[in-house]
Amino acid sequence: MKAARIHLYGDATVIRIEEIARPVPASGEVLIEVAATSFNPTEVALRSGALREVVPVSLPLTLGWDVAGTIVELGEGVRTHAVGDQVIGWIDGAAAEFAVAGAGTVVTAPAAIPLADSAALPLAGLTAWQAVERAHLVPGERLLVNGAGGGIGGFVVQLAKRDGAQVIATAGPRSRRAVLRNGADLIVDYTATSLGDALDGQVDVVLNLVGLDESRSAALASLVRPGGRIVSATNEIKAPNATRVVARNDPAQLAELVALVDSGAITVDVAERHALSALASLHGRSEAGGIRGKVIILPVS
Image (cartoon, rainbow, N blue to C red; front, side, top):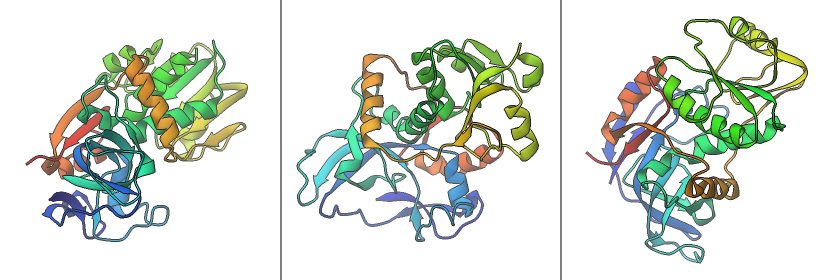
């Protein structure tokens, strides 16, 4: 099968599309024919070696954390799934034509959207779910979503609106329409104005999805009212009532997200679709700030 792999840490040129043996599911695992994976900016840090202390891996490594596909083989003892089931999940090694996953880590894919598009949901959706959950939003509160135009941001805006928040979102011109479509009440164009100048008073909660240095973190924290809350899904922000969320794989929460997609309460916005062979160029574009929203990667030539 074809797989996108790295043999060493480095820039985007270390990504290779290789022919390797198709994996065999062990006891408790399933073999998935991959319909799609999706690109996550965090994978840039994984590829470069920036996460080697946090996410230790063995090289060579097949990339890809999000998977959407069809189960084609069951490992010994699997009773929760059947061959032919369409599933999604947060796994390792999804940037390939086939991938193995623990049976308990994958859930039934949404029926309301194309199977490949549902690869946009696991990592970004779970990060958004857990960040919004940590924010403990109260209906009517003013929430500032910093980085609403990214793949996680689209889900954060929708989930926060579902919780009754008034959502103020930072987004550039390229992302403006998508963020409004997700339900934001007000857009602040960070390319044209500062947040402090754009806001009429302080906000109750800040949910940060952008990597910030110390000075920018302090500036963001100053926008929160006394007693307000800050949740960051990237770096730690040193301020009262500030917490950092490190996303975890939670299949039960993922199944709840699938139910929201199937009910129409949450939409999945796919900005681009590319073949597996384009993965290295996507990494390069991401490092240059050239990607908006979720990008689907299809395991085709």
